[in-house]
Image 1: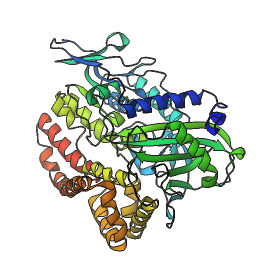
Image 2 (image 1 turned 90 degrees about the vertical axis):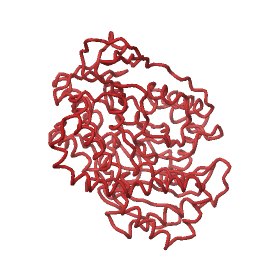
Image 3 (image 1 turned 120 degrees about the horizontal axis):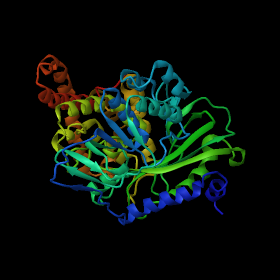
Image 4 (image 1 turned 120 degrees about the vertical axis):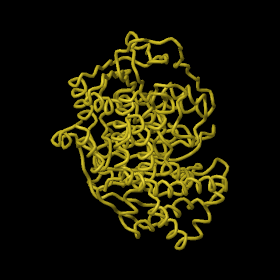
Length: 515
């Protein structure tokens, strides 16, 4: 019996079975055998009446937008395939990002403080053979999902929202004047929001079996028995490339122990390792990583999953009146895990945009596409993701990735917090990126030149286009600020379109970053 089988079989909830089910899905993606659902259809017949302004599919993160829209007076229904309840594992985020919950009247200051389960400082960035970089107040807040979602659920219902639990999404028909869902007896709505995540059946139908361009495999656990440690790791590596993967680690204190993750970036080639193999690697290396014997640990829970990402993002819906948000939209960085942090970052923008779209009936395919615009500051991170992994048949120096990342982070540390802190929160800005590139090129020219054969010339040229666009969006963001008096005088529909372009420039340049 493997270590994975020994440990997971002792935990409640049968996580070993869950791991193997996730592996079956991962294997189907690698083999291109995943069935393509056909859950959305079109009809030319008008509905004539609708009961809802918005129906949201996927409650775990959909409740954030649902509550914000219900507070604005819209008729909102939310369907969730199970019971809407947060998981036990905290969601990590930075303090300043949480201000949006106050701004949108989702939580009071007292409720926000109560939602914070853990805080720690400082956090480390470390790579084999390089010096350590330490930062404070970056992704150091652990939010209690049980309290957060429970509080939002109560507020959503109090604002007039309707929650349908144990109601999976099974299909929808798009009509000229609305969408009718098969769930809950046929919900009729003006707008359908897809918050079902990476494996949304709606998104799977649109992608038509398209293989992800990149995947992040993640395994981990929360356990008691570690030596006392109030610090965390944002990203750490202490091994060279092995199994054609560079292993990265994350760790931080939790309410009931210490959480540790092992993750890696790779493609979806059929020869890539399974999650179960990766979990075995995690258990093999964990003692060395945390200076502890496995026998000393009391595992509270385990975590595992994989996060696909696509270069062709954000995804474009082929229908009117359907809007993907969060991980469904593909609007997250391919370097991050997406999820809670990505949703919170765009929560204000999406709430304002959906509110205006409903007010002006801007619910066509083209109008809604402006709510999920191209963002060059996310597009440029594709090169970063590629430099953190290697191809199945690539021959590279086993320490190449560690040397590159160590050099880049040392350069950012020397350039100061204005460069380092946004990057660690998945916000890439043109001035900071340019300074980092120049400094790294002059201080570590050999390492930079190794990138070209690793990522390929085509990828590098493609990246240059997004890099130039990032500079252009930075300039356009300043123009958007200057246009504010003019925008206020526009008619509602014209303002909707103008506001969306201005927000695309703001978020696409990383100018939305809160210090």
